[in-house]
Length: 303
Ligand SMILES: [Mg+2]
Image (cartoon, rainbow, N blue to C red; front, top):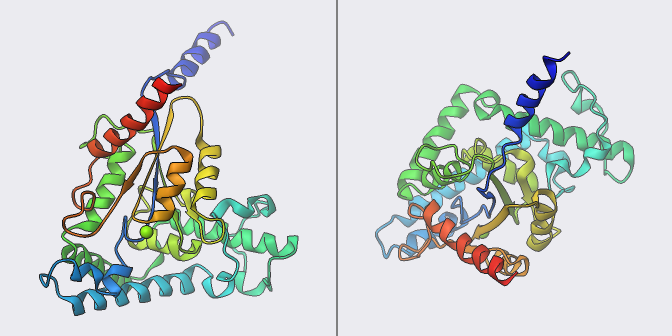
């Protein structure tokens, strides 16, 4: 008994290490920030390069992505059934989920309909949980070999066409949460969130297809479709706020810009134009840290 006490105390101490290093919560926009899709489809990305990039090729790449995203949603994420019942995040209905083992649950036979009562809310919550589990396993476990190849080829083609936009955005998100040796100063307790105006299920499909699933967990993906970005930012603040926590929003749109202003968070504007000050490849952790230091150091002086 006497020996157990110091052992317990030691274990406690190692998990309770007090650090001055702030924990950063990064709130990323998805479309035209971490990924390019609309600007490939409508040719505006190619157009900004003054004829240096093939416009038809960009549209074709965009269409192939749209098809792949829809196919994943329909075949694996119950999208035809649940597309009209968008929720802001996968955990939104967790209070209705009784935790039942879903291994042999027959989704096709549970007569899911509009989730306006608790029974159907539970069925929707089950679907959300199943989607979260698939997300956690990764696409290699979901897609067949042929589709993995189609996906790999499209990712590589797009990354090459955009001079590495996708892979450099992915690398930066890894650095942000200390998953990369390139950023030893990053705090591995830091967190990536995505707040996107797209609906939730296709956005999760995009995270998987654009290989962001190892740097953003499914419960940290928010759809601002109904609630708006400011409300999502408030939820994120409520969820993660604490001593030594700092937030930073990164996106291309005016909505996240003004929401960040309301929250008094630093905001970094991403632009795909080749002369844009913040784009991929290019945006790095040093720049993000500078933005955060400016806001948080001046606010600590004010306060
Ligand atoms: Mg955007």
